[in-house]
Image (cartoon, rainbow, N blue to C red; front, side, top):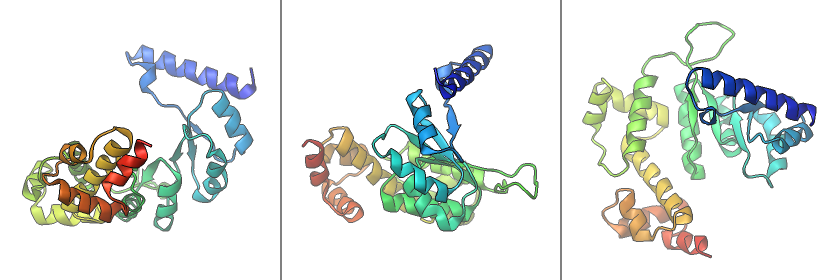
Length: 248
């Protein structure tokens, strides 16, 4: 057994023991290997030993590594370091998730990039609780409330967006909610839900085997013709084309 494989075995054993000690299932815990400053050869050795999740902290370094693993689509890449807003689009292209969203501006840039790429990009909000000058993180402010509202929209694609109801659920005025929501996502709640609906519909068409009509109704459209028009505007092809491509 290689040194890397042995190190991974030991870490997994420590995770297992800690999880069982507090009554958790070890399978619920994701091990992310910090691969910054390690060569592609070393990352490949870790992948061969069973690791799937890797974390990089610089976009520039990741650009030189991640493309080398294009033949291994099972690998998941996490951005774990501080991310500047001007690198948000490239980060959205490279990574499967971002662990360090620390400003409304960055959240908005990532949201725009993900929607333009037609992908769902999970993020973690990095919050500044210690107020240390050398550390990054967002002020607590109203990020938690907006995150709750985004979660509500993602969890219920079919229901119409009622701004006063969303604002009331998170304890904000309608005008304040609308302002902060747009600052975080760079779009309105209604447009944000539409983008989520179309992304989910594309997933249903390309991987779920759904028909165009079934996908439209599944994500909340009442008119399949309206769905087809908006889908074509978003992705550049009609939904029937994606259905045909998925079925060969």
